[in-house]
Image 1 (tube, rainbow, N blue to C red):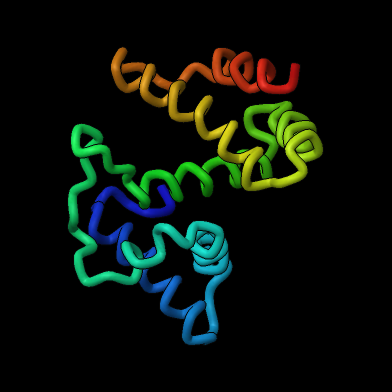
Image 2: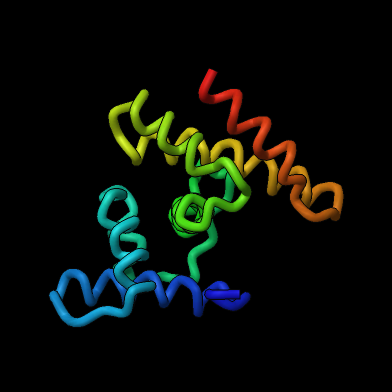
Length: 141
């Protein structure tokens, strides 16, 4: 696992990467990836740079967890880079062309990924790649 399981450690990675981007200091390839995602989400930059990295974001409070959202972007980008599951690069390419914007395409794909992960978590099973691909392919029709 790239990030580990400690929420605060993960959030600190986002914060450190963003600080390095803002300070224009050298970054690792992973930090560049993280900072790129923070960069396209100005609405989350204060959360990433803030002192309250341990803040809870609750859906019942109408809050989106910025770290979860950006993590899903990173997940989509990793899947596309490795073409895993097979065929996801084609879906991404088609959606990006159709949307005219990679960020919008990723948001559509994130909905499919989040649904697949939620389903697996609620059933206490591994994510179903075939269902995930079916959901993704529906986006391209």
